[in-house]
Amino acid sequence: MCALERELSARAIGELRDKALDQLGCGAGAAVDPVVRAALDEALDVAAKVVRPTGAYRILPVLETTARSVRTEAGTIHSALFTRLVAMCGGDCSIVFMISTLGEEFERSCGPAEPLFRQLVFDTVGSELAEMVADGLEADWRAELDPLGLQCSGRFSPGYCDWALEGQGVIAAALDVARVGVRLNSHFVMIPRKSVSAVAVAAREVPAPAPCVFCARDNCSSRRWPLRKTTRD
Image (cartoon, rainbow, N blue to C red; front, side):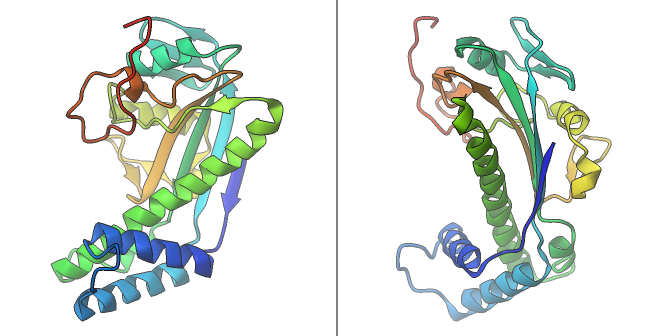
């Protein structure tokens, strides 16, 4: 298992500012209200001081597939769409399990008793930063697999498409999630909230980035790639 712990660079904070402004409706050169700017500056300052992004990933071979599941030594991924993606790949397939988190201190810095606008800004900054940390962890495993001639799909998380949130248990079994400061509650929700867990497919040939390309739910708010017709449709 590979683990990371990093500090936030000035460059990362600058990128985070741009992403947060865009989410708050102030992107593309739009004027920023002084109240928004002040709240954002505060959130970014807190993030720079207290957030130490941590994460881990582990690569396990696929042991067996059925029509609706993929089995590894850590457990079984129950998703027909993800299984179809695995079946499309060329060569032996492995599954990359990952989890990353901002930790709990950032969440404690703006609790439910704070003004709603401040909560909104802090939540936006936290959500964008959580995705940036996950992107960084994904870059790490891609850098490990690329010299081996292996391609990777995009990330696929429990609670999306047809993979139930209970799938968090498989990721927790594959990784020492306590080591990175994450735990699951009785409903399989991650604590801290600003955490990202996912799996990806690694193989000699991965012809589709995600199940989105053969999922016909055009109105899905989580769609990342357009539907692509294949010979199996």
